[in-house]
Figure (cartoon, rainbow, N blue to C red):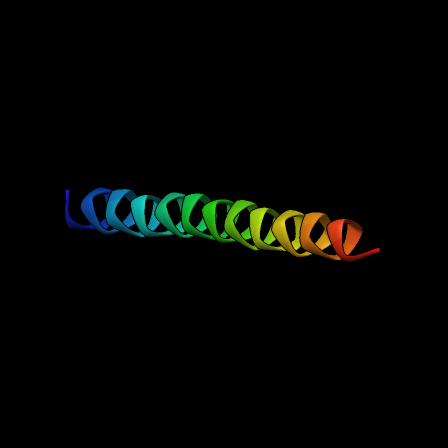
Length: 43
């Protein structure tokens, strides 16, 4: 019982970490897109 519970909790942390990194990647990509757009307008 205890081992199964610990495995479940560890799995949840791993999955939450993946979602967080994916969200961070999307945020960084949006910032990059905005910088590119601003650079294009300055040309």
